[in-house]
Image (tube, rainbow over all chains, first blue to last red; front, top):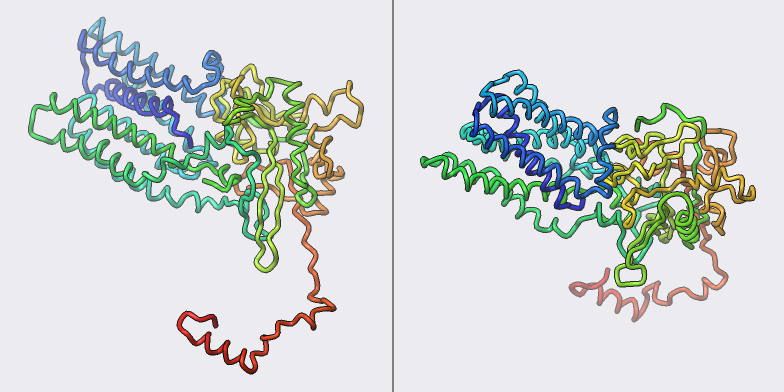
Length: 291
Length: 253
């Protein structure tokens, strides 16, 4: 799949933002006044900034309002509704803390859970794709949720929770990669089933429909970056999980060490997301003799 | 709502004969022509006469080489467009309701004024039937020439999809695949028509007819006895040479 920058940015930063909103809503830290204003501004800049970035890949962002209508079947529609709901509920919770020094615990819990709901609905957009066997697995939503909660814990300064979640995250991500490597083959879709010609013999793409490229090939067949996949996987694990855990557990002033830990984690998650798309193979590639 | 209808009154679709298709791409051209001049946004090209031409097509013809185990390879031309699936995954993922499957005839269409161009339907389609237009930024797909098949301004013989009407080989057939008595349904039953990627669970309406088995030429030639390779008996000097060379390291056995 084509790793579109807008979608990678959205997945990374909105994930962090909604993760922070989750912890704020649950009351892991209950700031008030100016301090609350700063905390919620950070969370909203990340969450909303990511959502805005995601609209850059739309052909007609001016019609985005229509995307709230099809919640019965569409995970993208559910994501939009969930995001608006979570942001409104958390805005009420935040306003009470900032302006009235009042802790509306129940509103916060509802908003916090809804924030995770956004991350879950996002992940299901990918996990539902039967056409992309690597994504169609429980590890896709699990990794999205884990990264969001872990990143949120890191941002909200909960060192031991963040470190624990990062260790679990690293192990789960390695499992997701290894199990994902065999999933395309296990899906049973081949050039033979794609063309229905397998009963005659082995199928090979002889001539493509056109001499140039096309929308499908640009969007779904991304082979260039895959050759560095192994190195990028190591970089991802190092930056997203290992380095932040080491930095967090060093016996220094945590506020200073938090900045490189956060930056390292963000760089790692950006790489992880890039790999998530670049390594995912769409079955339509088979019609072109590629994956 | 982008819920799929539980059933459709008709199942209009195409039957494509892989035995007959000659790979001339006439269906590709007529499709591009009709659908650029008629319903919906035109099918745009970018850099059409330049180094990297790119364009939107609703129908493309691939060519595959199929290698049977013990006979010569076959070249099979393979036109591919939307299969108007009964369980169309492209419809249910649509967040705006722009994609829909018609209850009356099963045609899958895009309401272009509702399309936000998110591309998710193209992701969900295993067949590559949907392409986002590079100029209009809306999703384009085969409409089964919905503006031809019911169009009473056209002569009766033209009331079929442009690709079917134009095919010089008669490799494309249009009809109601939900009606067991229709010509297309009979053709599918007779020739063993099949689905593409049945394991994807999309239940395509369009069917493909397999290439007919090739004739087997009997091993018979009046000249054959006179054209026998002379050294096959391996007698005399040639026989000795054959054995001697074969016994050398790396020699042919």
